[in-house]
Amino acid sequence: GAVVSQHPSRVICKSGTSVKIECRSLDFQATTMFWYRQFPKKSLMLMATSNEGSKATYEQGVEKDKFLINHASLTLSTLTVTSAHPEDSSFYICSAPFRTDTQYFGPGTRLTVL
Amino acid sequence: GNSVTQMEGPVTLSEEAFLTINCTYTATGYPSLFWYVQYPGEGLQLLLKATKADDKGSNKGFEATYRKETTSFHLEKGSVQVSDSAVYFCALRELGGTSYGKLTFGQGTILTVHP
Image (cartoon, rainbow over all chains, first blue to last red; front, side, top):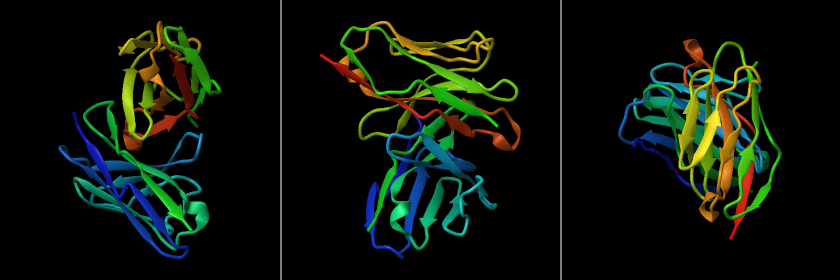
């Protein structure tokens, strides 16, 4: 089946630095990808929709200048957390739609900001 | 807007017990409904889905029926196994337009099955 990968799987950074997370569709093309944030024992919160060749669409309340999204190609979307702070520590997950009514999720990236 | 509500967890069962995880939704129009499962240390995987009223999704012994009249999509399994221990998410997908592929998730239900 279709596979979506994320890199890195875990990252620890200092407060004030920026962190880039990659999401790749390995065997299919994705003009759209989604970025979610998952809090402990909570649901996935959609942050933004990444669109290949155009600007990302952010959900209400998500700071687009803090969470920069770039969909550089049909198989790669990146999420950059700029000037990270401890409250940005979370589990970030991407997904990509494949055909109709099917989405494939990446394994997630655990971000810890010290 | 759309929303999904799942029963509060965690749910703890003995092996071979019957499982029900309730899920209700609110949506405009007629969304597609999904159950996703997240095993420890892994990403979300699609467990089953239903795209219209009265459809029954099934996979790995799990079933859920799209009930439009009660706006529900409860997950059931007749006999759970230890390997079913995971977090289960109910979700809906908006139809068409700029919302293509956008999923709205419930809060997740942690299931633990003991031998």
